[in-house]
Image (tube, rainbow, N blue to C red; front, side, top):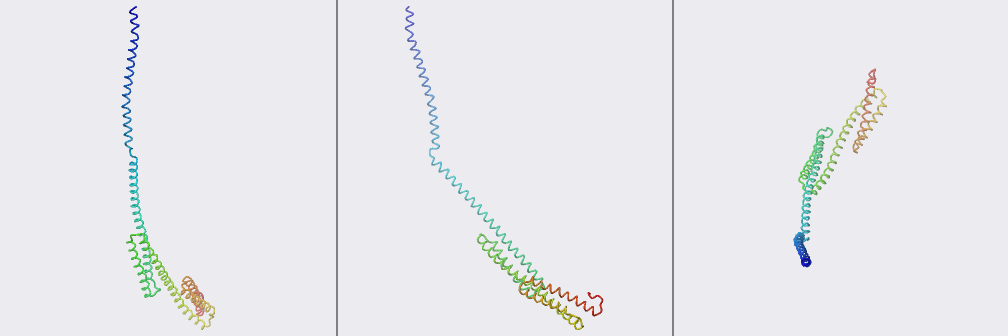
Length: 278
């Protein structure tokens, strides 16, 4: 009985002991958990502080990026300016080459005209000398202008020289036009002179046939028509209408050729020739 009571009396103490151990274990576990959590919080705090430190001054970062960008823009502008300057220089050289080629072409044509003048037989030697001298003056002026074009260093300078070339080419065109006109007029004058010589001979032939009793009325009519055409050709030639003057001279030539045939036939008839067309 006493032993049973003793066991009953010890039960509360056992419960208290077990409860105490459980509570102590719980407290120890809680303490351990707190100890484990603190380093993590410290690490997170440190990381946050480090992150905050890297961007602690956003204004400085913005200024740095802005400065780098501005420097890059300046560099690009410098490169563009360099390229533009080089391109302008290349364009200037191309333009200078084109102007020089135009000058060379003009000189080439003037030399050809000078050669043609020296070989022509329809103008006098004195006149040839004068015309050739005028052409050589133009060639010298063009070559001088070419040297200035080659030495040009700016667009404005080349523009001024190009305008001078334009004026010079206009002068040359007028000179060449006058030379061509003079040569053409000389050719027609020479043709008219020859036709007048033929007319004089034909007049003599017609007069002879007339004294021999031949009817020369038709011949005289044709001769007068030829004379009239020659006079018209001379007038047109003096007026500078060389195309019409040449046309009239050719018409007069055709009439004179016809007359020459008629005269030959009439003379053969007088001599008793059987073929009057020969």
